[in-house]
Image 1 (spheres, rainbow, N blue to C red):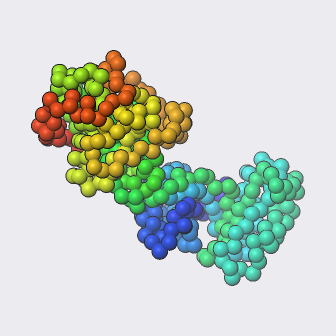
Image 2 (image 1 turned 135 degrees about the horizontal axis):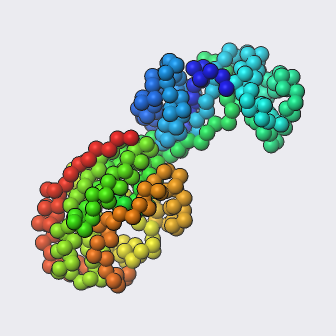
Image 3 (image 1 turned 90 degrees about the vertical axis):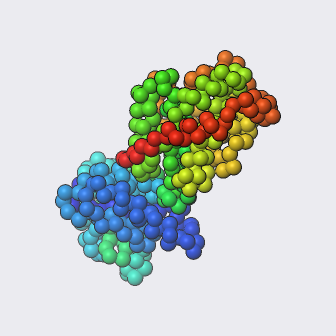
Length: 394
C-alpha cells in the first residue's frame, strides 16, 4: 500500500440522495456526525462534494484504521473507500494504481478497471478511462490477465472536481439515515439479546435514543446493571453518546406480587414499564417508545398481551423486531457486537417473580381490574423520584 498519509476516505451516501428539497439538511447532519465520530482518531478535514463525503487526514498522526472503522459505523453511509488522489491524467492514474495496489496485483490472477467520471469536463468518458488505464496496468503487470466479468481485483477510478482517485473495492457502511433526523425516542433496554438490536435498528433510521432500564435490588445485582451499561456503551459506537435512565422497580414488583393474580404479574409489570418510559419520554421531549418485542416469542408478546401493555401509553410504540425470529435477531446481535455481552448470565427485573402459568390471551378489562387495587400514581412517583441518569460515551 502507498503511504497512509496520502490516503483519504470517500464515503458514499445511501438513501439520503433520494431526499427532495430537504436533502441538504440530511447531508449537513451526516457530515456533522462523521466529524464527531472521527474526531478521536486525529485531525481530519470533512466535507461534501457531489454526493460523496471526503475525509482527509491533516497530518501523519491520524489513526487511519480507527477512522475507517468509525466511518463504517456512521448511519447514512453505505460504503467507505480508502483512496489515493492523483492528477487527472491517465498516466498518473495508472502509475498511482500500480504503486498503491501493488500488493493486490501480486495476489491477483485477473483484474479490471471500473471508472466514474463525476467531472464531466474531463476529456475521456468512463469507458475510455477504464480502457486507457487498464491497458497501461496490463503492460505493468503482464502476468495478471484481464477479466471484466469475475476479476480477482477491481481497480476503481473516480474523476472528481479536485483530483482523480484510485481505490480498491469499498468496505460496506452502516446504511440507514443520519442519527438525529428521525427525532428522539426512548428505548426500553434490558440485559437480553432483543432490546439492543431493536435500539440499533431504530437508530439506523435516524432516531436519537434515550435508554430506560429498570433495576430491582436486591433481586437484581450490580453486575446485571453493569452488563446493561456495557450494552449501552457498545451501542454508542453506532448511536453516539446517550443517557441511560435507571429506574428502581423493586417496590412496584413487590406490590404486584402481593396484590395481583399471578397470571397477570408480567403484564402488569410491563404496563408500569410503559408508563414510566412514557414519563421519561415527556421529560426528554421524545416522540415514541421503542421495545424489543417479537410477536409470539414469549407469553407477554402475543397480540392480546401487546394490546394490554400498550393500553397505558399515548405515544407510538415502535417494535422493529415484531416480525423477526430469534435466529435473525441473534445474527444482527453478533454483527453489531452485542451478543457476547447479552448472553452473560446476570438476571434482570423481567425474570423476577415470573408467573408459573402466564396468561397468553388476556382481556384488557380483566387486567385493568386486577391492577386497580394498586396505587399506581404513588408507585410511579416513587420510582421516578429514584431515577438515576447515567451518561454513556463510546
